[in-house]
Amino acid sequence: MLDFHRTYNLPFKYSIPNYISIHLKKVKLYSRFMKFLRRYLYLIFLRQKNLEISRILPAHQKILWINVSAPSLGDSLMDLSSRRLLSGKTIDLYTDEKNSNLYLNDKYFNKVFSNFNDLSTHEYDLVILDSFSSRTIKIKAKIAPKIVFVGMFGYFNGPEVNRIFYSFHQMNYLLDYPMTEEEIIDNAQNSLSISRKDQEIVKNIIPQNYITISLGGEWKYKTYQKWSEVINQLLLDNKNIKIIFVGSKNALRTSKQLLNIFPKDQLLDFTSILSFNQTAEVIRKSEVFLCCDGGLLHAATALNANIVALFARLTPEMLLTKKTNHFSLYNEENVNNISSTEVVSSYYEAISFLDSHP
Image 1: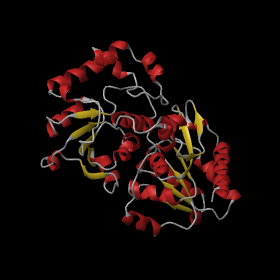
Image 2 (image 1 turned 45 degrees about the vertical axis):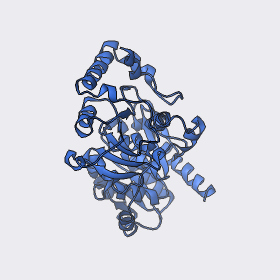
Image 3 (image 1 turned 90 degrees about the vertical axis):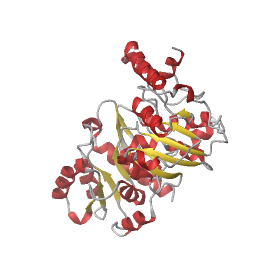
Image 4 (image 1 turned 135 degrees about the vertical axis):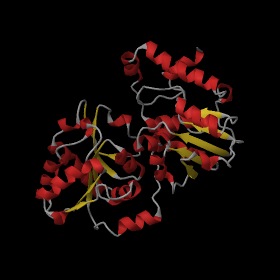
């Protein structure tokens, strides 16, 4: 089938950081083809195959973007980062409820939905699909069965890519290349809007100067276990430093342990207390943000935070762009193979950068 090449070839003319060759060696051809075939046949079965078009036209003014394939908050931010290229059009978003709160005050999305019934009275010129997964196609066929659509990832599935660059380059292709490759490299970035209410809430609970550390994590290979060593050195170097802990429920145990070790007057614990966007505002206002690869890292990149980030398996170039102020550390296997001395050294690099770029 002629569309099978779309599962492993980038759909646009420019190159981006990717692990496509690794994926092709790792996953058998039969498995890749059967996954493609299921999607291809499902598009035909739901009478959607002939509705796919290859360009977003000036006449497409009212657009629905369906984004339900992003497995995490960070992936959602990256996959939707190119929405700002659609400036001047009215864009509504349909996404999972767990991701919808990220975009409730968004400056690009007009309305955000996570319930089928809320869309029943809305009409669109075009639908943007995050992928051609069966779930996405089923939603599209139910919400807008006769409306033409374009795909972001489309049939492309499996290979790791820099999702921010992918989003920008694919949107640029769909709009018939209004931007050069250099313009995308210089401008591609996540976007996140913080409401005035959240800004005020955070303003009233943070000290004047502080750094932020993100604790916990969902995956052991990118959950750092040496924060106590890092904090100990930072406190020895600067007895006036203030440190705020952030993270979700999986960070509570670590934050409690750290609070029992170090002086509480220098630590503030916001783990599992604030909303995601409020936490992002805490990060935005901090001098430096120390973290591992995760959702809060991608929020930080959207808000131009100064970041010391720890990566494993996926290199920094697979997740960040030129717009990010980062001082990254990488290990092929596990972030815990990165020493606390290296982390502290990168922290001081970030501080030095801030001092020279007031």
